[in-house]
Image (tube, rainbow, N blue to C red):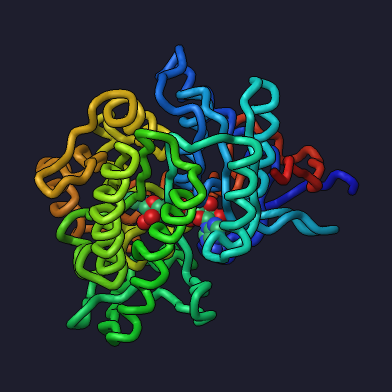
Length: 399
Ligand code: NAD
């Protein structure tokens, strides 16, 4: 395939292409952040499976497992490879760059590109782990998906982002036009709640852990973590108390069940880590969240306390994986402590009603949000020459 100049193709906040060199740069930046924070590898994780490993929190988890602990990693994700005249998705290029860096640094890495909800991909993952990785010390469950086909029934469930019980009106950013608008979201039907729980709840996590346990692929003391979000009251109707919140409650129920099973069988653990809001493909799709994130970015940056995905997972590694973990009264790990500081939330609540279309870029860090979103696809990344042609073809060892 010949090299091409790649320009961002986006409509509002749907980006249909990705820049391979920008994605590679993002990976190198994250690896450098891990190396700086963790100069000598931490101990306790020799082999790790990351489900949802190509972008966002899962990608950061895979990078920390590899460069922070020196672990062999298997990453599972669903990404589009390149085709003639069309770039791959960002997660595909991220993974190619991950493999190149891992190869350079002598870290074993395997990847599986396919539907993690399917029996076929789970079966392939089990084979690869048995053959090449050995029993797992860490399993990260970090899928964010709009739909799931249940392998037992063949039924495809579609998740929705809606309030539960009553409608919710709030302000949001019309991302196509960078304008403030009012949005009213009707409450979900019981069927929509159930479908969202089927996609983003704990069912699939249980299936993975049970399959790994039955195949004797979990090491003694194994730890498995899934990620959740709570956020401030401002977003509760659409997040914590909405359909996605119901799914996260189910994920937490799964953590309790899995924790009891793993403790008794292997001295292991299953935990939920509540992380901070960051700009990812998944979070940008939630109504109200882009406005909230634009304010959060401003307030945390002013305090010098903002963390991105890699910053959060480095803290998870240092404070909760390499050291005795600390839990909130409900038994969850909390990485959202800085986001939820009363002073931070009071400042956001003060600014929230003042934002208008005209002052959006002045009052909030919407410029940074927008750039953060474009960075996810490898665009507007510092140090990348976007005038230079790049090879679209790219690959990684398919495991
Ligand atoms: P993301 O969109 O960046 O990543 C999702 C990952 O899932 C990608 O690797 C993608 O390839 C993979 N994936 C999706 N469908 C798949 C499928 N069918 N098979 C295989 N892989 C598939 O998402 P994210 O924002 O990093 O979210 C990850 C987790 O973190 C979610 O549970 C989310 O709720 C949680 N979380 C996110 C935030 C946030 O602000 N983004 C905050 C706290 C918690």
